[in-house]
Amino acid sequence: MKFTHIFILACIALGISTACDDSSTIGSSLVTDRSEVIIDSAFTVSGTPRTNTDLQSRTVTQILGALDAKEFGRFKSDIVTQFMPAMQLDTVGVGINDIDSIKMLMFMKPGDFTGDSLVPMGLKVYPLTRQLPSPIYSNFNPEGYYDPANVWTPQTQIYTANALYNDSVNNLAYRTISVDLPLSFAKRFYNEYITNPATFATPGAFAEFFPGVYIKSTFGSGLVVNINETRINLYYKKHDKVTKNDVTRDTVYKVSSTYMAVTPEVVTNNIIDLSLSSSLSDMADAGENIIVAPSGYDVQLTFPTLDIINRYKTNGGDLSVINTLTFSIPVEEITNNYGIEPPVNVLLILSKDKKDFFADNKINDDKTSFIASYNSTTKTYDFTAMRQYIIDMLAKDEIKAEDYTFTLTPVDLVVESTQGSYYQQGQSYITGINPYVSGPAMCKLLLDDAKIKFTYSKQTVNY
Image 1 (cartoon, one colour):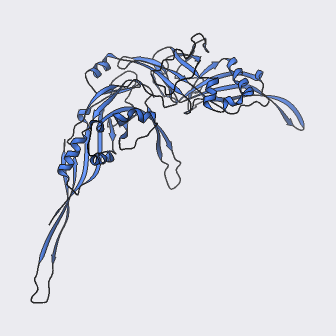
Image 2 (image 1 turned 90 degrees about the vertical axis):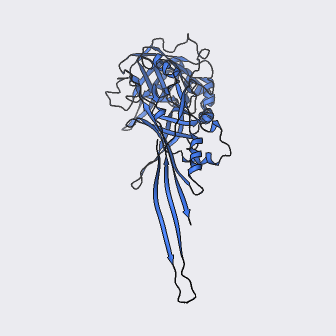
Image 3 (image 1 turned 120 degrees about the vertical axis):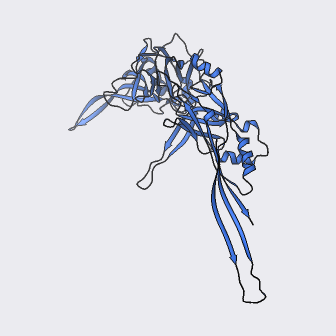
């Protein structure tokens, strides 16, 4: 704890005036003006773990697989998703009998997984039989939304994260899980476009025709992959005529086109099932401030807003100006054999606002909601822009508990970048904040060692 004054000497002015008149007087005055920058860090924060098991789906990121980690617990994630259709299909020189096959392709970046890349995993795909609800949450039960007897992949599709297809040989920037879907669906899809193209005009109309799929993890344990893009491709023959040297000949091309994809406009959801390890459960039961994600634990904390304001009013005076308010939380990484690390980004938000924040797709305003990224060097989450929050609290007639009760929850950020120029660097902006579903994550917050630094300038004038 610290309470530090940094004194900055102002000026001392001495004015002496004289006159030639014998009746004049000689007078003098002394004015002292002193400024101080005060840094106060004598504050404490308390917290408690809170379950966080119903994450609202706000992302196209999909996680698939299962693992059983001694220090983390048993984790499994399935997927339900709709698709956005293409508005136009290639029909010139293409008939229904020219369709060869249809595949669902799920793309992941190399290394974007948790667990063992060599572990063989299995999945099955079922067509949905009814519309998915919206909003939809991570504890969604797919029963009644698909027919267990109608499986599109009778043979379990096996995959790993090491060399899906031959992407590693081709040195591509992604790995692909490829799943064959029934040819009958491809032909039904094509016929619908020919007979009723309005079906493809909107996501809602298309979902009435094709509600989506249920992707179920059915085999293996030890690997969870992050899928950042899912498409359905149609493979077909296209008939055309080619003229060369005034000779026209019939020719046939083999073509593939992406006609469906998971996009932000459609409903997609990770069905998460997490049974915490006994060690994590014991920590939570003992009140230790652990973050476990996805669908595990947040931390609710009491910020010392009243103490900060009382200290400021007592020591600041009428001419004081608030400079900064920062909050740094040390993190203890939890040892495990699966490389499970603290979440990359966390959101600090007033607890009363959390539900609406995600439901309304808001971003941090640095007034009641703040973002920090994990610093693996210092092992801290650092919130550096809380000045406006304390200014707003000073302006309130009454401060209630809901004004200083916060929740710290892991999140995924949607970031967009502007292109730079020769004279100016490009910049990145947060355009979306979603509940964290990027894979298993955990850590312990050391709130007893958290540092709050409150800085303000104080001016004193003595005559």
